[in-house]
Length: 163
Image (cartoon, rainbow, N blue to C red; front, side):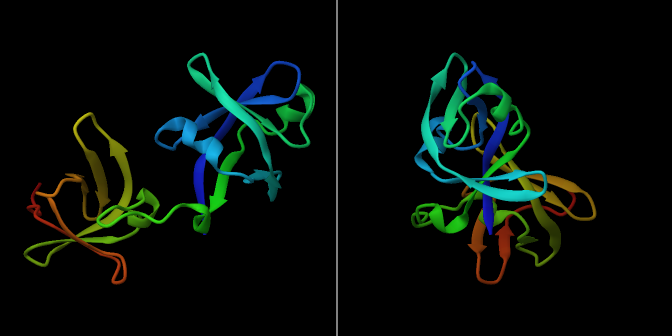
């Protein structure tokens, strides 16, 4: 399974550098992974990252085989992925968001609330977006999320079904 790290959103200069939107935290972490797997015209291509850095408020990267802006333009809009095995192992009680998406969410009364559709960050904590009979936003805190069992595909939460 491939994990999305970001997206190529533009070109930078005339030497083939690309502008990168990163979903990693910190965002510069995206440059620690190489090669990138990029979908171009329906096929996935493996491309080595030669260089990458912050530039103004964004990120830019130089990719092997792309030495001018015309060649780099074909990459705009492409997702940047890597195989899940390239990620370092998560620590104890740590999870990658990609591991949580799709898990069923059950409250302590045994009522299934739905499945994790996505997550997002707030200033205080991350939030699980759970879709079932309705959409629920459940804070990813030790008070609300009681247990995560990746083997059974289930998250147990202390959350009222009416919320």
